Image (cartoon, rainbow, N blue to C red):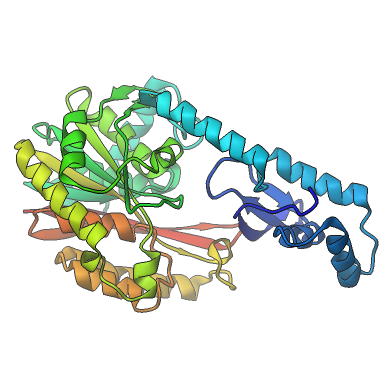
Length: 407
């Protein structure tokens, strides 16, 4: 408590009861709730870096606001943050260790977003998903009225179902008749930092409609073909939704015939900053080589899925200005130009398009899309639907799309 230190948090402006506040969220999701604080409290939080003592903070507060910050007030702020596990201290370390040990013992990965992004009641969830699959994209009816043949992979969103329902419906409509597919490789975006580029789990996935098993033989073979550690960061699977949402749809469409291989893809930040092709990084290229070898050894029909959103712009994602109609129009233009590279499976051009401005649009699906396209055997891609959703409170926007790849 003498030199309190915050853990990394996401912070962005918001409004609550008409007042300007700062919203704090735990990017690691150890603390599930968002915390809203006024600007003076956020100033205090900004000084919790492990280098400022309590008297130091009080002194800085007096200089900033000309008011005395009582010790009891300061300790209350710190205590509240500690209760939410926002502080980097021994209490949090013990809490994290307990979570890791608990998750390691589990044979089944429990659903994390049921009741939040989709219904917990099986029958009601089935009705929701059936409704999503009934959507017709009138802008490109031919892509929906006639099912594509020989689908090798898809891009599906990982935004919540209510906002992404049109894209989810259009793309899963295309593969729902692929009843001869025995294994789905699901490439998800890891929204939490990881030590390694790729993280797997052998745990089966539970949904409100039942369990989908992982193909443990495939995963073990992949582990033998690849020299890296695929399980060191396994805890990130506990709360990650980018794979979970795909599993829910797959369970509904293919129950109970299929198995999955859940692969979370870590950040490409360093590659973007250095303008480096991921294919030139040994950790990446070795994994792709091992994955292709394992698929070849498997010898059965495999379909690949990238659970990927596209751009994230606006104050919620660190941009200084809120979005407006003009920026959203420009965003769609840039996104569609990027997606054109995917239609032709121009993986490197897709990568360079993101890297050219240091990933200014924050394309969170970059790693899993690039990884899937590096492993897939397809001849062309088809864009089914493109969408944007804007949060009216933060004036920030997420874009996403649905695509199929055939060969």
